[in-house]
Picture 1 (cartoon, helix red, strand yellow):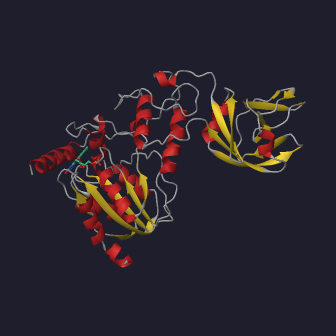
Picture 2 (tube, rainbow, N blue to C red; picture 1 turned 120 degrees about the vertical axis):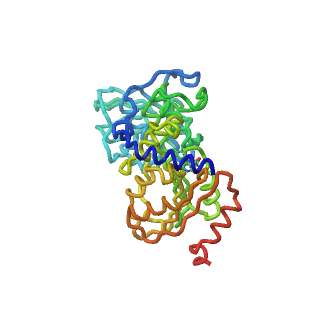
Picture 3 (cartoon, helix red, strand yellow; picture 1 turned 180 degrees about the horizontal axis):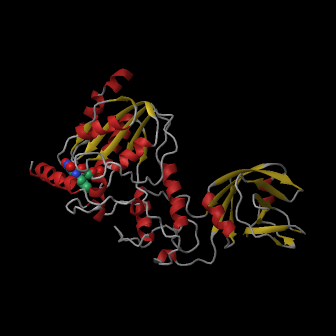
Amino acid sequence: MIKTALFAVTASMVMLTACGIYSKSASTATIPSYTSNVSSPDTEVKAASEMELTINGKSFSAVLENNDTVTALTQMLPLTLDMSELHGNEKYYYLDTALPSAPEKVGHINEGDIMLYGDKCIVVFYKSFDTTYSYTKIGHIADTTGLADALGKGGISVNFQTAGITKTAYTAEDVRNLQNFLLNRPAEEDLTGKPYDLDSDGVWSVFDLCMMKRKVLNTDADNGSDTLVVYFSRTGSTKKIAEYLIELAGADSYVIEAAVPYTDADIKYQDDNCRANQEQNDKTARPEIADPISSIDSYDTIFLGYPIWWGQEPRIIDTFLESYDLSDKTVIPFCTSASSGIAASEKNIAALVPIGEQLTGKRFPASASKSDVKDWYDSLSLKKADQ
Ligand SMILES: Cc1cc2nc3c(=O)[nH]c(=O)nc-3n(C[C@H](O)[C@H](O)[C@H](O)COP(=O)(O)O)c2cc1C
């Protein structure tokens, strides 16, 4: 009760002060384009970065060059290319997009060389020979034992992976950690030893962040369900409820992450000028989402979860809602809060964009159990209609 009153009183004060908008430039502050060279023991510069090729179930390690071509290529990994045969000594594939190139007359090709011909053609050589052609060097497979056999005589599918990162599962927390690091923000945890050098160039940079974001996006659960649980959670309470729901509904999931992550200071609501308060105080604020889900077309039902901020949904939820066509979707809001209800946010959501059908949502306390969530889920008319 005390907390409710506190929020009510302070909320009205914040609304009345109409303090400065959390400016677009601040909320979308870009990551510096510099490559930070602050290294933890795990990020010491390595002699070379590596790539792993898998051909017919056999793995080959390639040592990579240190050039712009490799930087761009490694950002595209993993790649599986259906490579064509040429001249009994090479396999090649034309990419859709051009890579940076700096061709040179290499004079001699060694078995195991990986080159870029022009700016789109990736070539893997499995025989040595002299050449007058120009290429940009990408890398070299040192141990070519079995390479020619694996590549065979015709076209072949070749998988290219950045060596050493394929087994690392990154989370939204890792994205936040690396982003904070690059923005020189205080770390929320000790980052020593974190595997954040995804492109193996010896430093943590914006390229690593891009690769990590792509991986996190790709690992959001997609199990072919027609139900999607979308949620934003800054301190984990909504996340917990969402995870129960994902399990109960057998749903796919998508986590809304801010392009500029919310720091502890950003959500310190006792501070009138903190970012969250400024955003909530501005109905038009639309914080940018880090990795927007590309499409929600395949889903009929969207559970939408968020914490209550000043009695309402965080503005980043509005960013999400305005980014997709929900006119034929069933949307079911749910939230966590210290004490406030969900009604005001439900009203906002209903008024913001056309929604096929919006079911009555549910507010949970942070302490809600899985059976609380199950009781609610079982009670939904949506569920009854399925039975
Ligand atoms: C900026 C801010 C504003 C908040 N405003 C309210 C509020 O108006 N009413 C309320 O009951 N709780 C409020 N809370 C508490 C959160 O709703 C609550 O801690 C929630 O469970 C956090 O969810 P999360 O862990 O998923 O981020 C607020 C928290 C923050 C950070």
